[in-house]
Length: 238
Picture 1 (cartoon, one colour):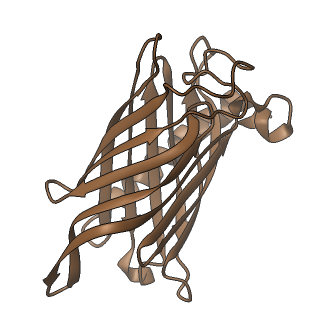
Picture 2 (picture 1 turned 30 degrees about the horizontal axis):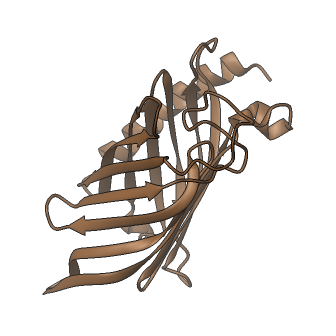
């Protein structure tokens, strides 16, 4: 596969695709978020991250079809991808998506292709979001370092709602669960949603990393347990 040529074609396609959806924003329902976060562990440096995304839901399709875009930046690493999402009529609590985009790795030769599949479940007080990302080398099994998963499951243990003409709206909520992110770790997760700018403050204690990755991909094969590793962030929605 000519990846350099594919990257150029993808850039053109992404510009066209995003332009089309942005032009239809008057009828589409658009939501988004930006999320600064930091990963820390005792005795080593802290890693600052910035991620974010946009979701389009298209009323003309009864909100079954949409588009999701995501970006992630940290310490020389950058990635962005877009793709369609689908919510079936018979399961309005489920959304699945497929995505394609680009990544730039530290010391890499340039932009290269990256792919992702995502699943979101929101049912009453339970929610789950999972995404699996991979590059061409991971897809062929040649090198698994380009494989990434980010899985979060949580449940609402306390909330305050307000009745509006469009239905009950959550004013504040406390959610507890677990999160696992390859190279960042696995462990308990807690978040607080506050009624100021759709803000969510969260903390993820990540003492376990099954492959022994250091939390910024600095090494592999180290200790599986690191009790001093934490990940915290603030998601600002709109």
